[in-house]
Image (cartoon, rainbow, N blue to C red):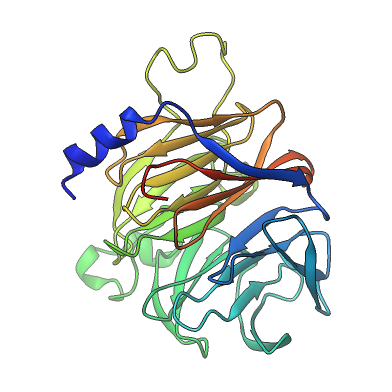
Length: 301
């Protein structure tokens, strides 16, 4: 569908429809829906990954030896993947049994499994694409001795430093672009200016979204700063972004043009996830505890 027509369809939607909402049965700091109608969740302070259905029922728990920082589901195998910031492990789950596939050299913050079954990991000052066995395919690189060399002298896989604190990752299955929620922590060499970075499949920067919206969207919001908690691509190649401090969820085109405000809540936005039917799962609350709302935000959902 042409992008101009897609934009007009989004603009005709009067408001988002909340299908169901319930008190979260467990603390949630990351969520990833699957094709079975439920969602895997984790809490970075917990060693358990939990499976929740659309009615808010806790349907399964997988226990790990370490705390889990992020969860992802392979779009091809539907296997659960996790990363731990404790031992730098990347794990795949087979029949509810976790197995360590490899370890990273830097502390992992986020994980995403691509359509071609590569494992994309966000770590301190870099995003790296691995094979499922842990071989490096591509990396954004980081500040190092390579950066002082001419471009033609650098390794082919070195792309320069463009990421500081990659908190969440999402791949667009239409373009293979990668959206990175970069919290930009000063501890990681950043400027404490959180934003969403979008790169192409070769990890070349396309644009950064810093929370800019039409003037009328936040006319009564004062100077509340943009603090993205999550970003997910939908089936139309659009980008859904959770905005913590402004308690909002935004919708952008894949090129970064603002489409509309999807939802405003009374408490902080903490995590979002999208299933294959563009059904949005959103967590609101404090420190992962609060409400889980399941929404339809476009007419094709």
